[in-house]
Image (tube, rainbow, N blue to C red; front, side, top):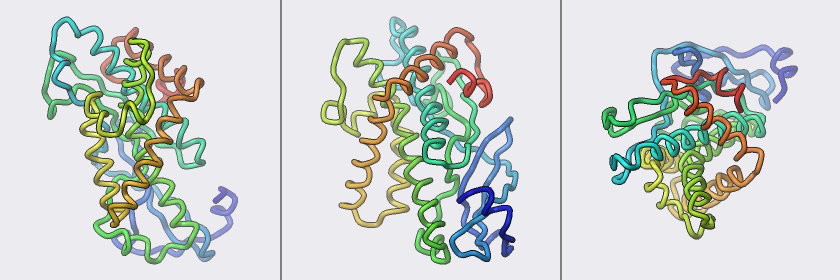
Length: 265
C-alpha cells in the first residue's frame, strides 16, 4: 500500500461508527485514531486521522523485590531498559514492517511510589490498535485481502512491542549476571518477574480477540514471542535500547517525548 495509491484513489466515505478502528498514535498529549476507509479499488485503503481524548499505555509494574531500598538504583536501571525496549520495538519494528509511525512518550514516575495500579513507569501511546473490536469477524467482514493483512500486521506488531519491554529487562539481568537467555530458559510466563504483568494482560486480550481456538492462540504467541527475542538479539536494536536507557537515566526526566526518544534511538 503506497502513498501513491492513496493519493490517486478517492475514498468512499461511510459513517465513522461503521468503520473499524485501526491505528492509534500519541503526539504531544493528543491521541490520534487512524480509521480504515475502503476505497474504490478493493485492494487499497486510506488512513484518516481523528483526534480524541483518550490514553493508550504500556506499563511496567512493580515486582515483589522492587521495594528493597538496596535495589533502588538497580530498579531505575531495569525500568529505563524496560521502557527503552518498548520504544525501540515500536520505532524500529513498525518501520521494518512498513507500518505507520506510532507516536508515544515515555513517562517515568517516582520510583519510590507504588501508585497508579502498582505502576512506576509507562509509555503513553505506542499501539497501532487502540480499541479491540468486540467481534473480529464483524470488524473485518468487509475488508479486502490487503486490508485484512494490514490489520493482521498491526495485531502482531503490537504484541511483539508489548513483549520486548520485559524481554529487554530480562536480557539486561541475564547479561549482568553472566547468564544465558533464550525462550526455553525465560518462557513467556517468566515475564511476570520482569515488570510484564500489565503487558501480558493486554497480550492476552489481543489473543482472545483475534484468535478463538486455544491451540492456535498458543501457536501464535509462541511465534511472536520468538520474534520478540529475535528483536532484542539483534545487536543494533540492543545497542539502541541501552543508548536510550542511558539517556533516560542521565537526564533524570519524568517525560521523554517521541521526537527526543527517536533522536537517541
